[in-house]
Length: 356
Image (cartoon, rainbow, N blue to C red; front, top):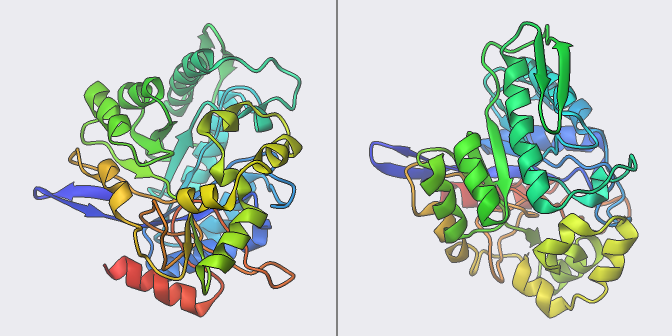
């Protein structure tokens, strides 16, 4: 994450907590280690099911956030990201976010997006097309902020209804709402309706569209996947085993319905494609340049990263995420932000990245 001060842009590094891969108590521990290592923020995925069955976990994110609040004092924390459209009504998300914001005063931000069929179709509701989901998200943001005002609130919109709803537990200040975007229309929505942008890829055009439609001066978070291992081949095997979906085209992520569908699609991804999409190995080689377009054009920028912390890069990345070992001793890849791991050498590597 980067912020502007006195005409300079300073980057902050965050740690991505991968709910798809880790049990809730482990996620709480990784968050505490991220803070102890010196990272400024963390983001945590909000899934009902993991991308693949091999990842193996998917705890309820709001419960985990409560646990993290009890073991951290400084770390800012946000969801990456919550879909307040189908599986969860925005009124429920508003209550959950308000409660967590009370547990993390001044440290919580709500990341929202249009979701994936994988998580949102489970109640049997129709999965709307992308443009409709964007309209729904814009209305959902209105509902969230309306409820955070306090008092009885009613809303009769195109997609959502409130009747005499009131949140009695609210933070002193409502949490910022950051909007995830992978395309132009979503970036424009983030600029006009959001308090910041969460970009799923380091894209100059995405940031430009965000800035030109109200996002100038707002924080921007960029995600990059990284997998640390003692050598590049080992890291690539971990990615192939635990995060093979990293090589899939972006549009598929929103449309496939089951973990088994992702597994079938990922079976077509080659190791070479994964190596181009995910930083693998023990050094930072080519990690930073591909992310610079996200950081360059604005007064305030944010860079988080999809990753498992690494000291090597084979393509795009600006930071790293953690790679604790699984029960059978194999390294586990965590996709998203930046870092620490259960291993001391990874924490040392993270500190070196942070110091630079």
